[in-house]
Image (cartoon, rainbow, N blue to C red; front, side, top):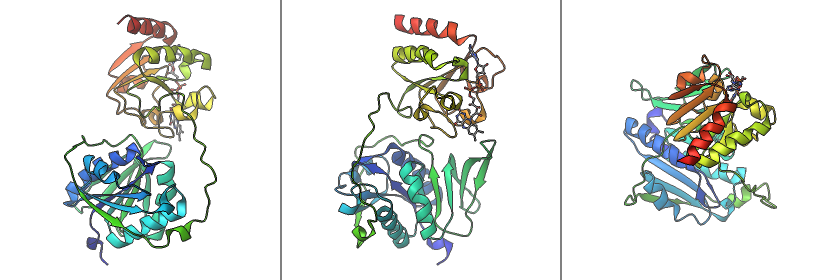
Length: 332
Ligand code: FAD
C-alpha cells in the first residue's frame, strides 16, 4: 500500500461511564480543520457498551462520520480489548491521521496502537498543522524541558499519530440539527483479550472544581510564601465564582495538590480569566495558561516575565492587593 491510499482523520473518542470526555470534542474540532486542509472527513471512533446515543452527540460536535464498536467487553476501559478493537478499525479503514487525547487512557492506548500498526507517535502535542506543500501532518510539542518547541514529521509511515493535551484545541460550536453516518463495526473475540479483571472502581470525590472546567482561575505561585496564604486565593476565587490553581513550585513544596498544577507538566487551561498571583511566569508555566482569554498578573517584581503575557498587570505585594481585590469584588 502506498501512503496515498490512507485517507481521513480519525479521532479516538474517550468515554467513561458512557459520558464523552471533553478532549474528544476538542479533537473533533481540530480534526475537522485538518480534514478540511486534506480535503477529507473527520471520523469519530467510539468504543464501549450501550453507546448508541453517542452518535448524535458526536454529530452535534462536528463529526462527519461515527464508527462504533459496541461490545460488553468494552464497558469499562481495559488496555487489551480497547487496543485490539481500535487497531482492527485502523487496519480496516486506513486513516492518514489518528488523534488521541493525552489523558491516562489515551497515553495508555496510543503507543500500543502505533506499535501494532507500525507507525510513529508524537506524544503531548500542543499544535497540529497540515504542511501545504506535501500535505503531511506537522506535530508540535514542547521539548528539552519546554525550552524549545519541536515540530515532528512522520514522512514514511501512515497513519500519522499523535496524542494532544486536553484544553489546547478548541471545540466547535454545537449544531443540534447535525446528523452523520453511524457505522457499527463488530470486532470478534474481544473478551478473549481480557487479561485483567476489574474488581472494583473507587471514584475520588472532587471537592473542588476541575481547573480545566473552571471559567475563572485564581492561581498562586511561590510568592504566596506558605500554604496558609492560599486562603487569600480561595477567598478571591469564591467571590468570583472560580477556583484556585498553582504553579509547580507550590505543588513541589507540598502546598497544593498536583491536580491544581498549571503548565507543561501539569494541566493546560484556557479560562475566561486567569489571575496569576506571585507567579514569575516561567516558560513551563506559560505553556499551560497563555491561551487564557484575559490574564491579570500581580507580582512585586515589575520585570517578571508573567507581565509579558498579562492583559492587566499590578506591580505590588499580593498580601496587600488580594484582600482589597476580594473586598471590591464582594461589593459589586
Ligand atoms: P518563582 O519563579 O520563584 O516566582 C515567584 C514570584 O513571586 C516571583 O516573580 C516574585 O517576584 C513573586 N513574589 C514574591 N513575593 C511576592 C509578593 N509578596 N507579592 C507579589 N509577588 C511576589 N512550572 C509550572 O508552573 N508548571 C509546570 O508544569 C512546570 N513544568 C516544568 C517542567 C520542567 C521540565 C521544568 C524544568 C520546570 C517546570 N516548571 C513548571 C517549573 C518552572 O520552571 C518554574 O520553576 C516555576 O513555574 C516557578 O514557579 P513560581 O513562579 O511559583 O515561582
